Image (cartoon, rainbow over all chains, first blue to last red; front, side):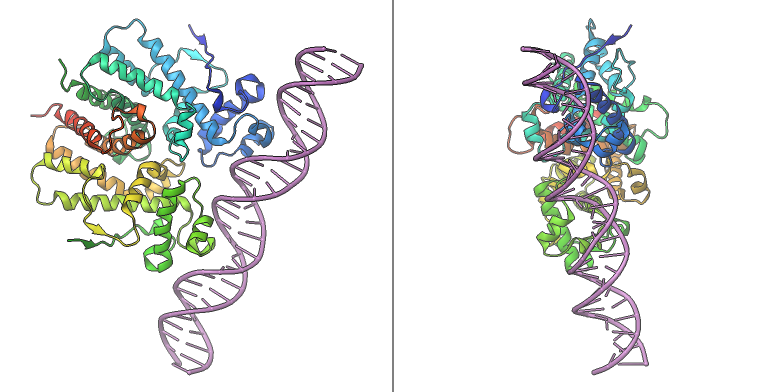
Length: 227
Length: 227
DNA sequence: TATAATAAATAGTATTACTACCAAAACTTA
DNA sequence: TAAGTTTTGGTAGTAATACTATTTATTATA
């Protein structure tokens, strides 16, 4: 059973809602593809326009610049992750099981419950791993943050933090641990692939070691002062 | 007592050694200042040239492009960090004390033992916090890695990993924990300043909470299966 | 069907990233 | 010390990028 998913995005993220037209959806679909393929630095609206068969100016009517497009797709991703988390932990009472679900989601092991025709989730995941940071490592973080552009990321982290508190109500740094868990999951994935000496995962195929590493990390931290 | 420090950099990092001339040193000094001030995206060789009173082309004789300059200054930083670590843990036998030193260094609390006239370490630290990631989150990580451009970072992490093993020889993921510790220290610092909802440090002035958070993180993980 | 409103394309500009070529300085060597 | 040669830095460009003002086409409404 799958659901059609419509994610409502913060209007500040776009000039014109990309979901409101075929061109807008094409910008998202081909944009994800192209950022994934050539990397964010080499991605330009000009190239995207040629690829779609439209013009630069038309793309600028949807997004202020390429950075906003990146922020849009990452925000979309975090919202989608939160949906998944809610879906998979619904009716689960055991907080340990919820934590395991969080880690499975982060390591991209849960199968998807939602389809969105113009979003390729595997590619989007790849973008978040390799370029996600660039959405907020800018000189204009503070303004972007005030405009709530990072709300989806913060919401996800807050939800994870609450699960941590559910597991151990005395733990002092649930939000820091949540953001650390998320960042670490993606960084270690990137390191495993490109800078393996920064990890201990060898050249193992899947993400079994990574999962175990993250589990130890979280459960060890949460064990402090428990009971 | 302070030492004059000369850090030997990998020649692939530059076209012409910036330490070999006054202009080269100016490029480093003003480059650090400018990346710190305007951020890496808005930093250009043209602006730097105007600031120094030289030309773009002259800067290109020292660095292939601005990304290489970023990689150079971050590599310099990691090398310097490793020097500091070696210096401060020399003759220390207690591995717990060594770990505390690592965390103090990462949170920038140890006072500096070395001077280099044309490098402002506070600014460089700020650059590593806010832009450091961008040195390796690129499409050309693999080539850059093959050219050993990230060796200083890997060396530092390896040294930290060895301290972890010294503390608990059974711990399975010393390198991952080392890179996680380093990345987390800088990310949490950035979040504390710009996205405080992703942390639990409130609006505390110093980095006391961060230090405590990192200590719990490391010691909890290393406690697993110890003794 | 006329009119307004919206969507998208044309045709630009300023800035950025980079390069080929040139000139001055300084360092050799005769 | 004069001529040659290397080193160092500058001039003057180009192609690509990031963006905008204006115009044209399309769609919706009266």
